[in-house]
Image 1 (cartoon, one colour):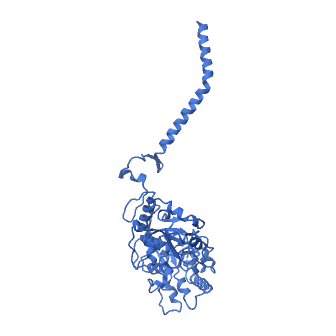
Image 2 (image 1 turned 180 degrees about the horizontal axis):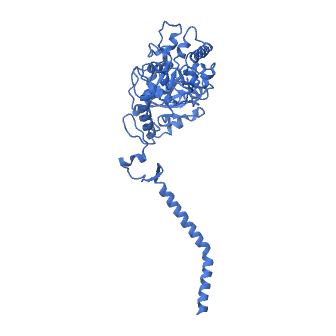
Image 3 (image 1 turned 90 degrees about the vertical axis):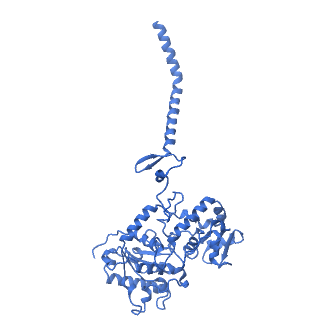
Length: 437
């Protein structure tokens, strides 16, 4: 019997020696299967505040679970917008901080903005424009409207010690047309001299080295205005329409892009998408712009494009109303008012302007209401636009109706308009530590 038991044990050992490699493989297969099951399961989890919360992406989620699937973003009508649709990175975060700004922010304006027009031959350079809606102001409208809105706002304080920022109220546009300061070199000298006067007469400049001071302009000459005063250039904040981070005197992390808007007395009624029969509209001069020349040469004969060198053969705003996409193509500068024109008319902006530091880009997700194309991709323009799905286009069109309030100036400023949104950009730069006066 002992011999029989030994033979059985020997046979089992032989079988185990034969099956052992296969058993190891079986264990590995089982372990891989378990890992795949866990990974699949984890795809149905959201990590929130350090806790994994399970949800089924296939089932229709009720309002109680909506926060798991939707970003806390809302349109101006209070509608909750999905992550993939909202033009805001985080509406609720922005709106709460905006309200704090409205209650807290204080700006000291240097007294030159309040002096009599008879005080000096240079008074007009500092005073608010008397007729900002004059169509002749054109591209410089935003520069003047900001000053008018600020001087009439509750942000202004007469107590410099409580101010977060200090406004230097000179106007580059007015200087450009002033008989004694109109040349680029004379403007640079004037701005440098004014800054020296401010720093010698007031202690606020020296407390921060000018880092909490700002000035506003839309004229392209303004980008060189600070070139003869090192601290003004390096420390102070430019609020400018010409916000190109390729320009030597624009510093993206310090300076602020200003929405460039033409004078507009009333809000446009949007043409619906099904009434827009043209794919593309553009009208503008081609000089000083290789991108515009390429655009004209490649697409001027395409019947789905309305492209003109100079003025269009029909009213300018009609081109925005009847087209789905409106081009903003870099000219002499990265910026033009075509972007805000397109937004105001419900025409999805197509931005072909490399190095453009877009206004309000830390609040607005521009990819949700515009298309950004590299200048070298002009030959592929039509293919790119036709690849946009109908659903994506309609979402962009809807978002234009939401964001266009941010690209408008009013005689009496309104909540979330260009003025308040620009001031909010300043608000985000607050908190500078100053030395004692």
